[in-house]
Length: 358
Image (cartoon, rainbow, N blue to C red; front, top):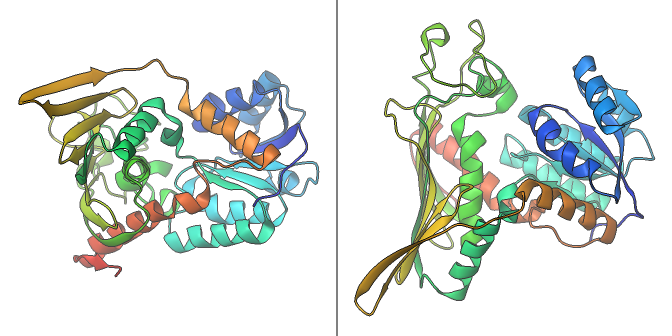
């Protein structure tokens, strides 16, 4: 059991890019049980501007200043992927609770080191899989657990866009920084939903293929929109923009097809849960459809809900977990199967064969 703190929770945000500035800082600043003590970012102008916006008195471009502050109870690690493991471990060893953005790390062995550091320090370590706090995801999980779908035979994930490589040539497409492409960026969210909803706890084998051909010629890459853009023409693109695979688990098998960029102008962002009694197509971030066959009649019912921001709910739950020692849906131990699956999928793609874990 992780140690609890006395309110308010004194926090430091490490890395003030898009996810921190658009999601986590607004959540923390509106929580009366939180004090924002430090903002740290490599860009001094950005961190100064955000500090003025949220009334934070301490800013720095050096992580050590916040990590060495005994008045900090918890840190948010919103840094590039390749820094997640070492910074999280350093913070845990300094006695801080840690919320780390996804992916936990770029290698499964580093995720295990992070978990070990959390257990050794007796401090909370949560990973930013916000979909676990999404109302539709929770409802689908409840329907599966209650037997509405019967036995789940298969789960299929689709996360495909026409031309949507983020920040081509920048950190997202530089393997040394990001650790991977579409599988590590989008795929971990979809696999996490599949695993969370079905209760998958371990994997038996993984078979994956990846490729990165469409974005190779950065200067001639045609696109309609680019998040994290514009392209860095003299930058790097050494990650995958396409991935597909199959994961055999202790529950249903999970297949997927994903693409940051494909030469088909269709968008697919959904997860199919295929049971022997009924099925569900969960639209990523936007409701679901329940397919049933009762009394010889086939029905499909589209369900949409008004729901709270899952990222805010996730962050509020992290605050309570640190203060009261309560559970959190994104505790590191509950996300290990996803990091192992992704690690072995990349290994399979590199070796050109299925990786057996049995």
